[in-house]
Length: 109
Image 1 (tube, rainbow, N blue to C red):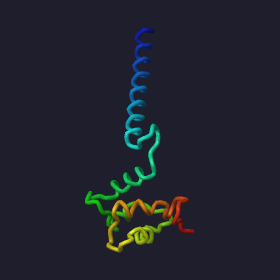
Image 2: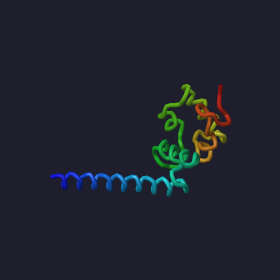
Image 3: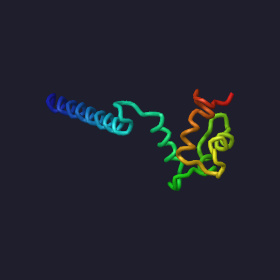
Image 4: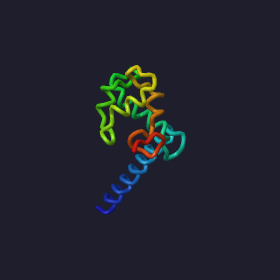
């Protein structure tokens, strides 16, 4: 009985080590550095999540489906839409990092 219990513990420890190693490897392959995600990668992932129809442009309607700090979603969208075409490309979306919530350049008081 004792042997069976210790074999179960060994299995659990090995399983946890395997899962931790897999998570570390996935994170490393995405960011290029072990255990780190770059802000650019995080922005690109947010863009891909918001681009519901996956056409490479976030419309105002898609943008407004996510919560925006201070409730200034429309204002933030307009400031990021630098060419005024009513859609945000990945470049426009990621160039606006810091608007509305972070401590980055462009923070609104």
